[in-house]
Length: 413
Ligand SMILES: [Zn+2]
Image (cartoon, rainbow, N blue to C red):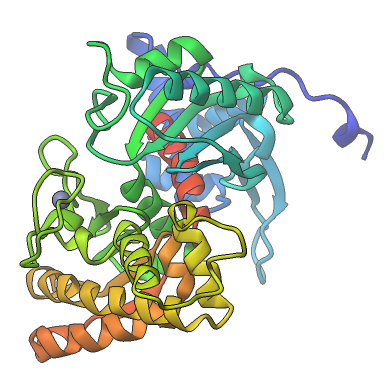
């Protein structure tokens, strides 16, 4: 008992360094990482399980385990509860060995989270006010807010192995370049932020990070072909094929919102006309809402003395959740238009599941049912019978969980 209370030795995080090592050191480091990955995927494991999967002898595995315990990365979790035979020790990851910081950047706020080594979120701060604009000031402000979060979080910077940041728009996650926001300099945005914060930084497209967060949540592990639709002001998509995130050549896959599906004169923020996003997105919702109010319709979303120009997507979502008729009608119209896009996806991918995520998914069946009905009407019935259409389990939390996991899994794997 006293042993547990004693302050643990400093964790040795050397195996996660990517500095070049060779020979025996390299081999041992790879084997130790393999053990961590194995425990990560299969849960607490015995030495017998590990040596079987590693292809190493039991004595060799035992010695690697002992080194990892010395390093403070894994711990003895006690004996396996089995009936008969010898009871073997189970080994698991040490939760506070290291941490991963996730930063989910939205249009008007940021969500922060800190995840421990065992994928548990230990500290979160949601809806920190922020304005995402493509200006140096907005980037400076983002960096300032990350520093502030680090200052108040429960762990020291040295223990945080990685920082994952989600941004909307075109992102090359391999090079760390952002092409839609903060591309003022030649060097990748991830590098600029990393130099400021001092933690290895990984940039990911927001929809893909949310999808990844959602895919990794336990209940979904059964399905291997999932499309995750992120319905925020814009619209994006994360694609999971055969259990793997699909990126495309440069990481630009999933630009679902910019499929030209409508004959309208609305100019999308991508510069083109008729994109799905011009009819089915938070931007579209706000635009339609303003049009209706100008026609004389009323809504509780528009509070007393509030200018129609200040109305946000969240005001309309909240009003819908409080039975506001105009908001509900507009959201259901968005759902119907969305269904047309989903019909395209279902015919192409034949997925097991479509997940509606992002802020608009908080309206639940108000958006899902009209989407399902249009989807059934427009896609091949044999194909759409295969596909479940669900609302995200994690809601907006998927983003920050995905950001932490992006950093964690890039480092561990
Ligand atoms: Zn567009």
